[in-house]
Image (cartoon, rainbow, N blue to C red; front, top):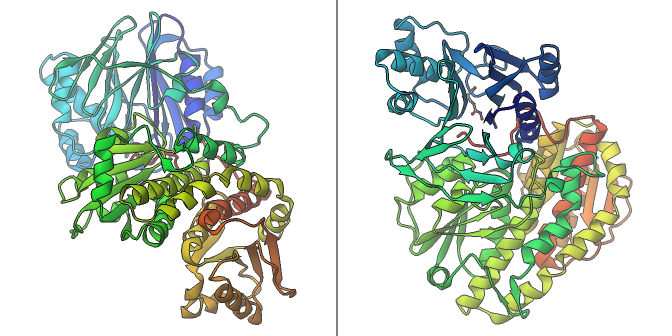
Length: 609
Ligand code: HGA
């Protein structure tokens, strides 16, 4: 999604902005731009469609220098990808970069046109720029008051940074909808959408809260909350290691993150398995234990890959803990009238903790009759963590690849631990929770074994890379894994992939089977194996080509290929079987020469709904 970076310093800020934009690239974007007020008080704006490198080329040919500026990587929501629509947007002396959506932008646009403003872009953001200018000229307010008055007229999300050519001694930042973090320097200060963009200049940060407005000068920062009360927000020292945002020996972050999974899962488990008997989350106190004891139904809401993890958890909650569980896509949840089950715990799952749809769902759930809410999230300090009754961190480490991998497997690890904890607290079945605790510790080693035998997967990637359509099949708790495998492939290779529950084959998708529609079948040794074998025969009898992921032997047939996996305990099999599918998507995209870490049209944390 859009990335914001801005700075006010005593040195030339061009490189600070450029380096920050490079760090923000991972979020996904389609164009980028910056504006600097130079030492002669001119606004220098440079914008470019495509990668930040193209912008840098333009900048390098110009020699610009200034001490205050704003920059932006844009992921278009309103108006096509074009230079005119790229931020920063300017209205006379007002310069702005914005993350979010202004829902009532067309009414405001008509109004501002009537006031004589000329629009150069189709964006909702330009409306804010003109509105600020109009408000400023109406009465000679200070810029903070101008902004406070203007945002009363805006519906939607508008985290933004504003700069005024007539007063180039300060930046003003407003957080409403998506995160903004202030970076503290010596005689210089910064603001960005996330810490990563600023780690090259500082380790000291202040996170703005929803509704905050901050006035940032090079030697002073004033923050006002949504009630316009001056407030001190806590300074934190970043623990993110610079090394973790480097690719090291890997070609892509996604590759690095796939191979990191044994270590991320180790980290997720660390200090949480007490004496091999119980699960302990530091984040949950006794009061939260009571919440879990009283839970009789689980409602999980999430998007994308997190939704697929939730789907696996549904099978687990019902089969292992005997607790009914429903799973719903966040954007659907918030837009319907629903009936809340008795003593239902509302759970959200999100890597970033900023996913706008999931956040809206949490806020919507608070007006309903849930027992309480819990978020499972990778980012401490994120909005979901702050706004939920309680949270559990996945501790996957920083995930930069847009296609989520280690977040998925650590989410599943946490969910399995949570189930074991609930089973113990509710005294459901001691043996089941002990079995979970024992088996879950094998995860890092099992995944390591899978990661050592990638040759088969590379060969199959070669066979599949020229296909236009691929079908994924799975049964039981492996059905959501088939969905996740198909999603990974779509995201980074742009091959059309669909996933079905294997039992659904005869009810429609069998019609698609021919030599051009390969099928990936997840068929580990479990009670469903015979049914899966039957499906494989049905596909093969119709000339379909099947690639089977399994720890079992299958009868040799021309059009059947096996990706042999080590034996894996059924309980943790979904977490392990997704790994070869991540690798398959990765190698196919690599062969096709795609930009794996920044797939077209996609963004890392989806902060607009
Ligand atoms: N609506 C603005 C900003 C989009 C955004 O925040 N994306 O993440 C635009 O379309 O330029």
